[in-house]
Image (cartoon, rainbow, N blue to C red; front, top):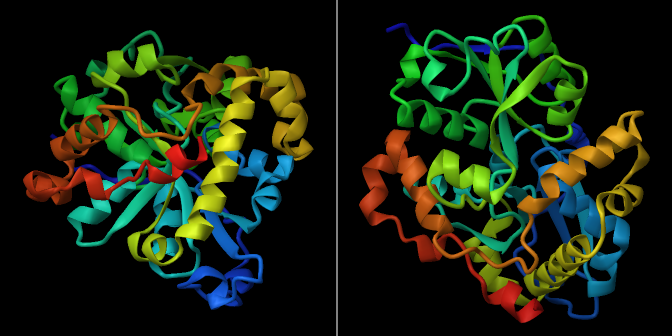
Length: 348
């Protein structure tokens, strides 16, 4: 076995201006105690142009945050792991990222909870390069390969490790490469920096349309996720610090109201209608391809923002299989403290 190493495929630039964050102060109560003011909530998104997190910008575009009576400022970091760190530093009030971070953080003695569940499956796929596709046909073939993830400690990293171990391959048997997403992931796949990697749309659509790779394991649908992981894996969510939620229930409800309204809107509109509402630059000059990526991935979204039954247990099983942090605390994890359905149900 070789030692697992991390290699950066390309530098990923954060869209967030450091000065913008430095100028913001964390709010610990609704509108600093002034009910006459519209509350402001800063939400960090782990890749704002990723289709898995589409509800964040779509809610803004539809005007639903404003309608709900809350001023939401959307910021972005290239990965969920980076977004999580900004929340813990008190620089934002919420994160749109994978629910699994709330479990990992509880194992580390911290409390964050998903207040609205945007997706019931990861919305991700393991994409194999065209060059490697003939010999790399399943997770059982991961040994000796260079596998791309968004970043170390990200959800793509977690899921890659789980798929490997489930198929008899140890983490030390393959090389993990921090490949980012979008153009950096595509370049890594094209130039041989990775043999395969886990990513999301619209990157998946770009890679497959250009003939650079093909989908090997598809977790954008319930069927594909259950086949790969053994159950639903609730992923994209908006999570917040437990203390903030307790002190600011009215503000949290307003934000969740807006998200749930958007989820309902998605369920009643087709991909072309959804794409038309998004910023034009998200299509990267190819609106047809962007629309296709939304069509392929939109089945992942919940319609009501409520955590799916059995989902948290699957996530805990995945994390408890490989993560030493979670494994050591697995029997002590209280899943009921990692999410709440009261805001989404009230919105419904």
